[in-house]
Image (cartoon, rainbow, N blue to C red):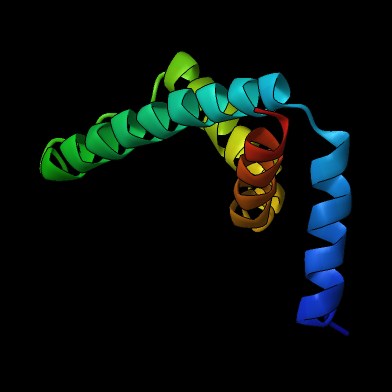
Length: 98
């Protein structure tokens, strides 16, 4: 079954203690890049859909790019639930150490 809220918070706090701010910044930067890539992929998909009267198959490179973006999204999905608690914890630690 699922973990209780307290268990999830304790786990997020434990993880936040193991992660330094530079690592979080790197992950945040990577997430921004992935988000922009996904937005570009969504625009491309919409463009392809609007051209459905004259369908053209995806090139091998397009298919590879879409597959790569999907894999990155799946990898990062697991982290998204920890980000709010991690952000709070890092802010608290920043205030504590300043």
